[in-house]
Length: 168
Image (cartoon, rainbow, N blue to C red; front, side, top):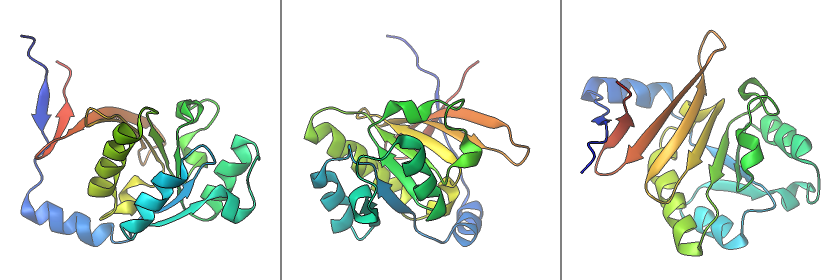
């Protein structure tokens, strides 16, 4: 068996409370037109603010225009479109944040959405200017713009606790 280098992300109770005070706002999402209506309904049923692009009159618009609308409304873009992962074409500094879902069965996507709702909805501001690619195996690739403008990348796994992939 291969030993995978996952390490628990330790956050003390004090650090958790401080993060809670810093990032109080819940995230708001803009669902790209490729996000199925069932997914939008699932997210809404959990009390999360999400608008499909058609509600903003952006159906059949190009990706750059959809991304600008999300940025203008300070909404995380929820999409199946993996092209948004490309930092050269869609730099983090030009986004409010992007969440990419792996397209699979409705059950797989529902699992990804459960990860999203379980980990993003409490402290949504923390994901401003980040890109997250959620996978049905409970992992997520994450890119975050740091204070110096540099992109930090990593991989997290969501189990009973949050774990981070650690390269030796």
